[in-house]
Image (cartoon, rainbow, N blue to C red):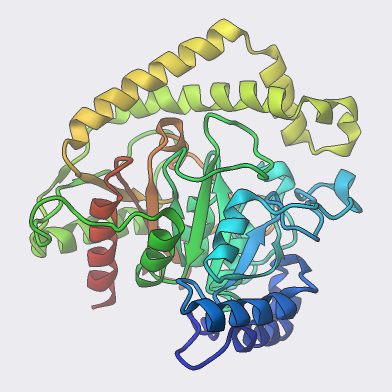
Length: 419
């Protein structure tokens, strides 16, 4: 469904890009339901971007149209957070820092995309354009679907547990969770200051790299020879629910392709740590969510049962249990740093399998929970597909500060899977 261009072609204007995006949205939104609201200022903002480019010279992301997850503020639009208690809020006066950054680079916001309730489990109406009738995942569901359906080439999401990795996997697009602390989250309605991270969704790794470079200022220069192979640790988890056989085969095939291309590949044997992290992540998340969003419990009938249970669990969690969970998390983080050494990357499944049928649930975040707990940068790359055509995403996990190695493996893997 990738009908809209990824970037603004040479000689074309930002206004052209916005008009194409709006036409695509008009053509497919009635079946995808990716958007909460569209910006009435998009065409005017595009014209302003064109004027700036004419006066100042080319802008790095000139005319790139963007969808923004509706827990992230955009000036002039309300932030509803997928909640019925915010059905008619006032428009916010100031955009989130990440939105202002993209606009400074020449991008144009098209509108706000559907999110689950406060970025947790209660889903919105979005269907999966890559597998109609199946969940697009949560909570960056609208952002992933908007990119997968060709409405916009870039969308902003967030991740606290599996909120971006899973939608990217289910919808067959590329998603990057930035290392914790990389982006200013001012203006983002999160759940956990210790776990929330910003995410970018694009169609390909090739599309993602220039956006990431411009947004962060990271030139993605690798230390040492540029053609030095990056070590890969292949993760085929044996924790919790079993992998779908198709996903297990996808990881095995990807590891084989990387090895054949010259990457040193060895197994990741780390499930003991992962089991501990899978227990500690919900403790940290609930404790912090109860303090970030405690006011929601003042009107408990206005929120879903899963969110109510999360906040209640956080209220009941002691400070000592929270502290102990963070200490164990930090021990695991240090151990993983030693295991990865200088720039190694983990390859594993982005989800247990392809998108489950139905829109009433968003799938399991089990396999993405451990990585936000350690603040890791993650890139999800579309892999092979299940027999019925549903996408299967592969996640690559790296070290903060070594994103160049992460992109090197992601780009290599994307090319190998396309070959």
